[in-house]
Length: 164
Image 1 (cartoon, rainbow, N blue to C red):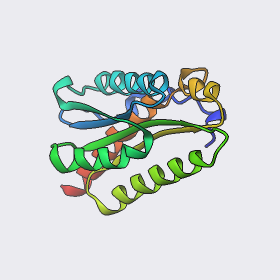
Image 2 (cartoon, rainbow, N blue to C red):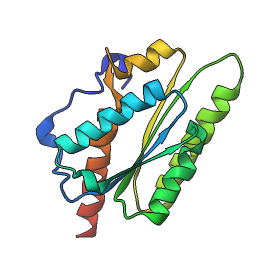
Image 3 (tube, rainbow, N blue to C red):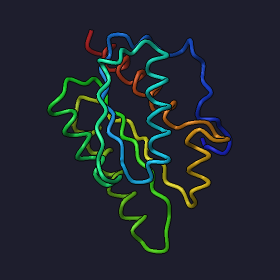
């Protein structure tokens, strides 16, 4: 569903499992940190709201959105996480750079999901303007970080339900 028709921060609280025993990795891009920092804050607040313990949340930064795949892979490889949230923001400019970064990050995250046992949550905002990014980072359309946290909790619960 298009974000224009859906507030990213609205959801049924009771539909989200308890996250008390879950371990999360969050890899966040330093580029456009005015946006990614707000997304990170939303994700952290929502994880804690659903019972996640601070000591079970590991946050690491990478320089840009293209590096999210490597960062997520390293968290999976060297940390005991049940899910990774990859947070980034790419705003279209005057060159094709936007297309390459978005495509590379998207394909990388997809590959990690297809090949691995740890869900990697897609928290990459790709917009035409900074205003559109701000709208999705706590503005009029809510906070994509909230949505990513909910998705991480639900995907861990999904994976755990299959392992029983």
